[in-house]
Image 1 (cartoon, rainbow over the protein chains, first blue to last red):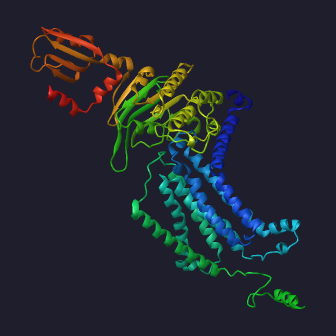
Image 2 (image 1 turned 135 degrees about the horizontal axis):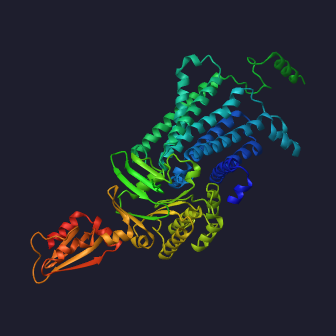
Image 3 (image 1 turned 90 degrees about the horizontal axis):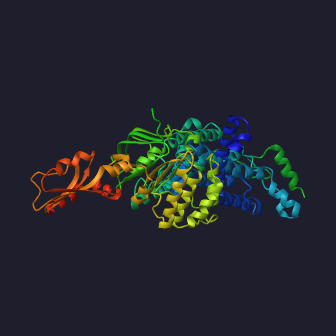
Length: 303
Length: 307
């Protein structure tokens, strides 16, 4: 090793190289640990977006991304707690700071990759263009294009927000079972944010992008708070414990889950009614049609 | 001032709920020595080790390894220390090869040929997931990873638990080997297998109820604690007789047997001068010493009552 360091020149360069090596080691571990989950998510997108071509609207990416963000938050944040390897991991040379940031970077990168890439394929209509090179069929007819930019932004921000809420909770979970609560916490956080939207009236006249900013602030705050707690986390694999034990804990879990789902549904309905999205710009309704669209439709109707 | 490789000063840890695992623990281990830590279950050995390594945050006192508090130490400093815990689980989905590749990113002195040699010596499947291995094999993988890091300080908490006798012997041989090298490493070994300690430990700390109750070099300890037998020819011991420095004693007819802490050769001269008293002194093995020092009081009193 000393020979290798000697070739690198100055000690500062050697230290920098070693730091890079630590980061690459941590990232390599994340890849090995989560490659199956990433492959599964990628397969779902490829099948849904490129083979079945049902992921042709940002709403699909929101649903797919939220599920992935939620799962990734728990997987990347709480991998060691769930495996019971925290004592081993914490005794290794990387510091708590390095561990947290490396896992966060890997998780955020995966969420971004799995939301931005599907959105780009929708915007650029790539699946149909690619299939069009191979077959001449109805598949090549362009899908209706969603005009709502808010939905595109939400398709990135919502999964990231889910990840950002779940990751710090999972990272600070002391045991395997506590991870379940961390996952629930992600839904609870978003559900509460959604409920707040129904209460805070001054936000109503503002456009939907306020939600993106609110979610960004909420997510960043959660990640920062999680980081502060993680720096004080004791590296000890504890026996499984939950805030409550047994049947009472199970029913509490179910009630909270139902509550969260209810909040989320209400919030989703509220958001969808606020955003007037033309379902198909080629077939506008009488109320939403622009003059030029009306003319185009009239022209199309002429035999 | 001497810089100790491991230095704990008035270390304490109280868990939520009021359990005090460690209280006022002082431990100094000089560089290059093997320190054996023994104590009963629940004495606080593992908690003390975890605080030394920065896995747990002390409630009181300080813990340093190679001059730094491991809770705050940077990556480079932490790379000088390796640890095998009694309940350690390595990543079950990784093979020994992958684990070695992973850990080689963190340790400047990582020795891959040595890791492979150890794997052969321990008869480990290099490309088999550790989750598919037996408990003993997983323990061997942990030991392999700790040794291949070529640490300056090696902390082993019950490393031989779950190992077969051959693997245990190989582990001890490896420890002797790394200790004999130039700049040999400092080893803190916590174990219940006292025969292992007797083979390699230079210094021994006996821990009880969260603190070190005895801490000395092994040879000094064996010289200090001895079994003393006093036989009174044809009569019972005089009233109020006790062996000087006795920690425990029992009387059966004319024979008084005691485990005594003898600080000097002349300490028993007074007993020898009693007419008709014969004094026999037997060396005490570490295991006997441990049992005698930590045997519950109630049991000793019961022995006294029977006599």
